[in-house]
Every structure is written in structure tokens, then in C-alpha cells.
Image (spheres, rainbow, N blue to C red):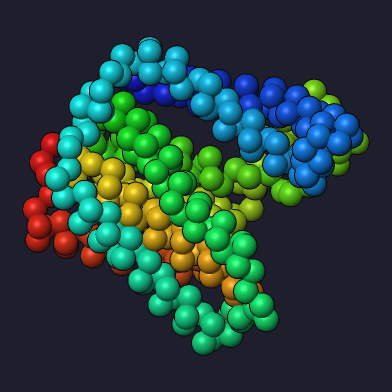
Length: 295
């Protein structure tokens, strides 16, 4: 279980380094803005820099992790070339997007959501770009690197559970917006933001709606990766969920918040989880039909 220990150390080091870097990034941005350089940076609050600091720390520490685990090529992580990559990518996207879109339209019909008066096309374009980039980055990290490392020494079930838990925690632990005012930022503000994020676990409904849903989404993506020994199917699934959920949140307004059934977006809550599980069942049936790759 040395790889698992290294992975835990990587996540802990990422959190610590990110918390330390966040005030530096924030103060640097404020200094640039006051000197009329990159003035737009002044619009972002501390929490935005805290998130970026965590991402920067994860990237910086990635190379030591790869060196310590002696990963040289994708076969070291149990990933093989996929001659049916386009088929898997397209099927994953459709099987994730179509049921979620039907759910969204039903919620509008039931007056849970209502259409906005104007479509923010710039924001919609940003969501489309995110649906292209985020699935590739996150699947390479979580289902590619992290899951591949655990599969070298742990069972398939425990590897999926552990990586999905990390995936859920990192997405669920987002501090409240503007929880720290610009004047109150100190050297320890990153750790304060981290503590605020963990405080969400005190709300059982929020945990059930948010953490649990994200955990099962991670399990679905991990299972798709294991079954195909490829990242293309989970990338397609991930992209379908992000695109439909993101665009719908830009063009429709939520009128009812009914935790744990429905959360802040279409990927949070028991209802979205049910839709995702239905997609999982379809993926499983389809893989049985076309024949999944055997590890």
C-alpha cells in the first residue's frame, strides 16, 4: 500500500501548500491592480485565489509524485490504447447528457426551475469551454493517475471507493463565497478557508445532497475507466454532465431548493443521483453488449 500512502501524502501536501500560497496570490493580485496592471484581478475575492492556489499546489507537487511512484508510461497505470475511443467518447457524452437534459426539462415543467429572461451567451460559451477542458484534466488526474496508482496495490473495489471519496471531498469542500473580506486576509487565511469548507460536514442534508452525489458520480466514472482500461468513456460522461448542468444553470433559474432532493445545480441531490445511476446502468448494459476490456 505504498502507493496509497504516497497519494495521501500528496493530497495533504497539496492542501498545506495551497493554504500557504493563497494569501501570497491574493496580495500579489491586489498589488498589480493598484498599480493599474491586470486591474480585473481586483474583482476576485480571496476564495477564488484559495481555489487557484490549491490547483497550483497540485500541479507543482505532481512531478514529485510521479517520480516517487516511478510512473513512466500509461501502461504503468493500467491504461491501454483504445481503438474505439471515439465510440466510447460519444456514447459516454450522450448517455450522460440525454437523461440529465430530460430531468432539466421536467423540473421546468414542474415549476422547480424557470427560464431566465435573457440568455447570457458569454457565460454559456464559458461553460462549453469548461466542458471540453475540465473532464480531460480531472479524468487524467483522478481516474488516470490516482486510480491507476491504487490499482497497482489495492483491490478494484477499494481503489474505486478511495479515489471517488477524494474526488467528492475536493469538489465538495468549497468555502462560502467571500467568507474572508480583503482587509481581513492574513498569512493563515488559507487555513481559515479550509476550516470553513470542512464546516459544511456539520449539515447532514448538505452532506447527503452534495458529498454523496459527487461520491457516486466518481464511482461511475471510475468504473467506466476500469471496464474499458481507457479514459475516453469517463471523459464523455463527465463532459455530458458538466455541459448540460452548466448551461442549464445559466439559462434557467432555480425557484425551489429542496435538499436533499435537489441542490444548487443539476449534479447535486438525490434526484440527479437517481438520473446518474440510470446512466450507469445503461453504461453497464452497453459494455456487456460491446464487450468491455478485461484487466
